[in-house]
Amino acid sequence: MKGWISKHRKVLENPIVKMAKVKSPYEAWDILLFKVNHKERKVVIGNEIIKVNRGETITSLQKLQKEFGWGSTRTRSFLKLLQADRMITYKYNTITKRYQKTNNKRTTSEQIQTIMI
Image (spheres, rainbow, N blue to C red):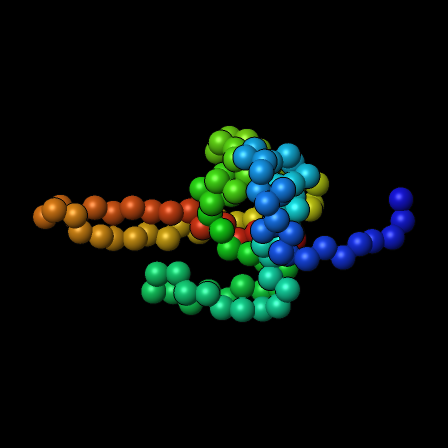
């Protein structure tokens, strides 16, 4: 099949697209394509400014799981499959958040993924 179509990011807001709680691999791929930047920008995560290039996005495994309606194993396997086929590259950074809760100091960490398509 030859040619291409133009698809706007707003398609993700369509109620028909939102109906599916569990996404297919094709829909998950579409979501990743819509999430990447079309131009360079900077984001603030915690106390750090991170440059996100064109064709990249920053997200977490937890956010992707929620968007895809999948568990962590399926989400990780899908990302590994895409990376093995050289459709994406991704790397992990751990952002540590510190907070105080009822006289105890607790530390949580969140895995932030940079996905490049």
